[in-house]
Image 1 (cartoon, rainbow, N blue to C red):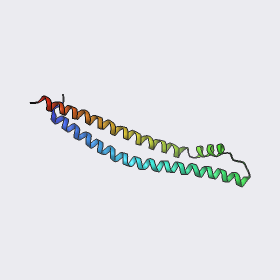
Image 2: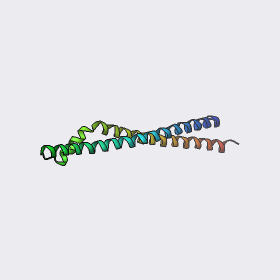
Image 3: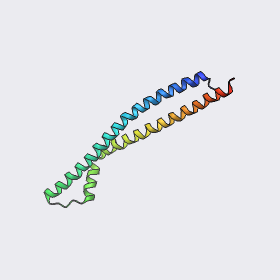
Image 4: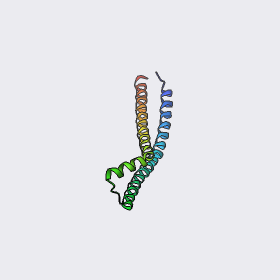
Length: 117
């Protein structure tokens, strides 16, 4: 069983970890927003480009054809977008785990207060 001092140290360490996670989450959220913007703009640009090319050549370009072309052309940007979104979700989950850990440590601390005369 942890001593009250060990519990206090563990809570302080977890709070520092949580502070670091919040900082990382802030940065990851910015990166995710940029990645999403890059992907969506790139996808739209590719759709417009293939449709304009169809107009110039007199070739009919269907919506599916334009979408398929844009999907292939922006695969890397889509991957970066999905990875950035996943990083944000992972950091949020890590913060929740950290909060749960702190709650458990607080419970241990409360048990010490009620047991100790």
